[in-house]
Amino acid sequence: MKKDLSNIKKAKYLLDKNHCVAIPTETVYGLAANAYSDTAILKIFKLKKRPKSNPLIVHYCKAEDIKNDCELNSSFIKLYNKFCPGPLTFILKLKKNSKISKYVTNGKKTLAVRFPKNLKTEKLLKSLNYPLAAPSANIYTQISPVSKKDVKDEFGKKIKFILDGGSSRVGLESTIINLVNKAEILRLGGIEINKISKVLKKKLKYNRSKNKIQVPGQSNFHYSPGIPIRLNAKKQFSDEAFILIQKRKRFDKNYFYLTKNKNLKEAGKNLYNTLRKIKNLKFKKIAIEKIPNIGMGLAINDRLKRASKR
Ligand code: TXA
Ligand code: MG
Figure 1: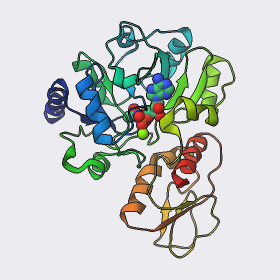
Figure 2: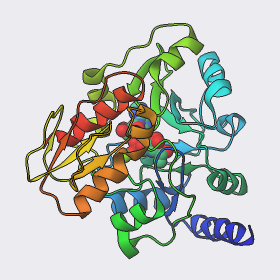
Figure 3: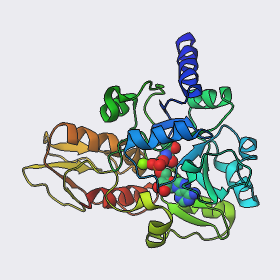
């Protein structure tokens, strides 16, 4: 407990000095910095090697904390009450007098906000007098990190401090919903579309091609382990690591289970660490069994499609 507190203090100390710190969230680990500081935000882009045209998500503790930065609306309040803190990101109208760094939004008039569910990160956010901009803590286009070890794997000593909050419980990035004008889903993720539709009492669509324009970072070649991935595979070739979602009778040392009983939530949680494991074992190719396109399977398939584009 004491150690936790001193780690949160250390993170705060570094963030107050405009350094980047990796923070745990329920989706993936984030590379965080003061969202009100140009100096701090530019460090994120540099460390991640991310193009500045790709805007960042800003993390807050509670709904009332966003009031100075963006405009709330009734859909936001309904979804916030149901799902937050949790894996949902809202695109809202940026307020003119907001202190958010222009590098966070790439000069856009909208802001992505999120309320992560992780005790340490929530405590850290509470202790700060600014929100934290944080993209996933990986080098641009690489696999997102779901533990302290993964962040180390990505950045080595280049990052000053990683706040350890255990392994991420959801394991896939947040769902992004645009609430400026008509509600639409911009990224599939930790909360299923039909659950959001139920709260808003309307059908929501996920439009990937539209999304490409609005969310540049969501275009192809993301989440990549850097080796070819063959989707919907029934069998494996001898040089492939084979990713499975249901138990096979035969034992093979090149089998990697996301789940043994088609539990798609469990599969989502294990996706990135399995891809990273296979990459680190130096396999040259990956085959993956068909994942049903329902529930969390939608988000998993979305990530796999992007990861398999080379
Ligand atoms: O689960 C998550 O959302 C994780 C954790 C760390 O919170 N963060 C994350 O950030 O996935 P990142 O930077 O890897 O992805 C954020 C996405 C990008 O594709 C970006 O283009 C989009 O959000 N985005 C940010 N601001 C936006 C805006 N104003 N309008 C539309 N899309 C935006
Ligand atoms: Mg990312």
